[in-house]
Length: 103
Ligand SMILES: Cc1cc2nc3c(=O)[nH]c(=O)nc-3n(C[C@H](O)[C@H](O)[C@H](O)COP(=O)(O)OP(=O)(O)OC[C@H]3O[C@@H](n4cnc5c(N)ncnc54)[C@H](O)[C@@H]3O)c2cc1C
Image (cartoon, rainbow, N blue to C red; front, top):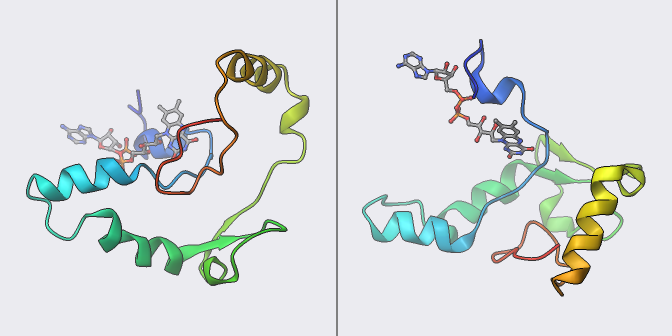
């Protein structure tokens, strides 16, 4: 994967995802000083610009604009994913919270 000019960054799906709190904290605990979730959150907040109706105004000042795709729920892939997560009783959670397990 990613063996092209620009690497995987050139062909990803453009879904925006901060990552898991536990991953950052694990890296910090294993020597990555300054990479705990608490350390990195100010930088996420600095560069993000969420354009959602319910966005936190504190998240709305950066240069990386993140929007919702209103058509995504009509795609076949979304419908299959939606059905599977309901069957597994997975909760609906926002993506960019410390522990975003769920749909
Ligand atoms: C199909 C797909 C979909 C994805 N969708 C998403 C998404 O929706 N949202 C999201 O957040 N992430 C997504 N990702 C993950 C994301 O794209 C990667 O995590 C990110 O691009 C990694 O960036 P990077 O700068 O670390 O590496 P890359 O962008 O891959 O850059 C690494 C570069 O190093 C080069 N390189 C490697 N080895 C050598 C070497 N020995 N010598 C010289 N050059 C070398 C590679 O050719 C490449 O250009 C997706 C990934 C894939 C594959």
